[in-house]
Image 1: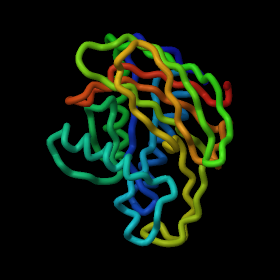
Image 2 (image 1 turned 60 degrees about the vertical axis):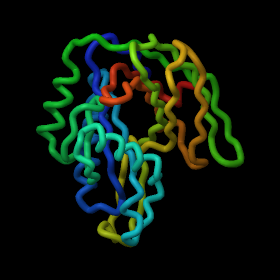
Image 3 (image 1 turned 135 degrees about the vertical axis):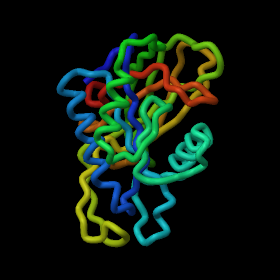
Image 4 (image 1 turned 30 degrees about the vertical axis):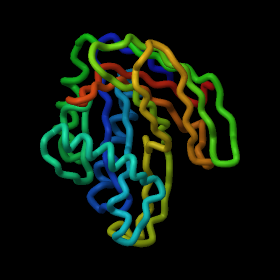
Length: 235
């Protein structure tokens, strides 16, 4: 699937989650359903699962966790004025947040985000991928209109169909199937309307089940004002 630059409503759905949290699997099922339905309907909905690392000390180190993803959730907590971190947390377009397993709140927030509105056009094109010693390198070119005020372009590689056997922690003994897991992430200042981004993903990334999501986000209020995605399998 390749999503063109949106010129109207869209929804970037970010989930902050952890394999060590026993209330997270139901929320991840919600995220999987959101992304699956969007693909079937051709809707501009972009799902990302950020695995935070603050559950790791409770007995199970999440293999997808990254301190950078915890820092991203902390930035949202400051923007929302709550200062509170929790999982599972869902954030839609950088401005609406709620418990990630709340299907009704998710549906309402996404429906509101999809209403026609002005959006910042953004496109991504994969220029190449190659396997290096430390992981798969992904090179992308982007093009967008530079928005007024300071903004960044977030670029994430997400992977579907990941399976993990959990041996310890709150989910001990469970087999978790997780989709839309963020395997690499970077943010670049939008100093120009076009440029190039490189990311290095985990060596075990399967490009057949991976996509790249790019989304423009304002600093300060964290509002997301444009988004697109491209499948790595098309590269």
